[in-house]
Image 1 (cartoon, one colour):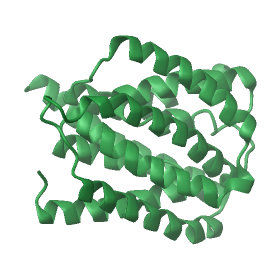
Image 2 (cartoon, rainbow, N blue to C red):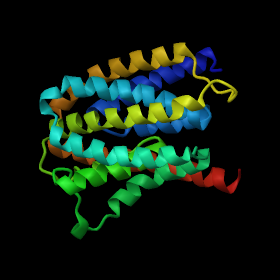
Image 3 (cartoon, rainbow, N blue to C red):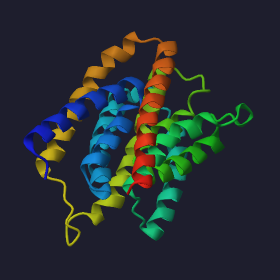
Amino acid sequence: MLTLPMMAGLGLTVLATSFLSGLFGMAGGMVLMGLLLMLLPVPAAMLLHGITQFTSNGWRAWLWRDRVDWRIVGRFCGGGAVAAGLFALFGAVPDRGVSLLILGLTPYLALAVPQRWALDAQKPLHGWLAGLLCMGVQLVAGISGPLLDVFYVRSDMPRQNVVATKATTQVFGHAVKVAYFAPMMGGGSGQTVEAVVILLSIVMALLGTNLSRCALDRMSDAQFRRWSRYLVMGTASVYLSQGVFLLAFP
């Protein structure tokens, strides 16, 4: 059970991370996932993160709905459905240290993709591959934004189209994550997420997303791509070190 100060801190974190996600289309979810993994058991952290990010991404997709590339969304959902089906066959629950390790490694692995294998979400096959890989990583580490970003960095899409399309694909991803981890809660598991925590997270996610829109309009495409990289790599380094520590000293 979270104390009142912890709930207040969580609410402010959701507000800040939703603002970051609305501004850059990523980074915010990564920060929030790391915090939740430190506060809650893995299934509970995955569930609360999924609900919060479903709300944040859903509202962001609605705000930028005229900028969504639905062809990319359809391909992503197709590949994601394949990955979700494979995970459902095994019902695996990742270890906290493993989740943090993969969370930290994901941006580095994304940057390691050779130039000759340049990925582009606008290419049909790459859209399916993005859905397959990102959904798999999301069910293990809780987020896939840094990996998903590598499918957009070499495209010629304006920043608003990138944010809108990524948000719409993430709505699908987080919905699958909620459906996957929700059955693990309650019953004899002893794991629950309080309704007031869920409500607080949803309200703060909506507020943070609304606040980000004006800031995104004022930012240039060059600034958008540069600061996205800095935020993700800095956060990834912290989680990578935490994951290594937990695995080395369980």
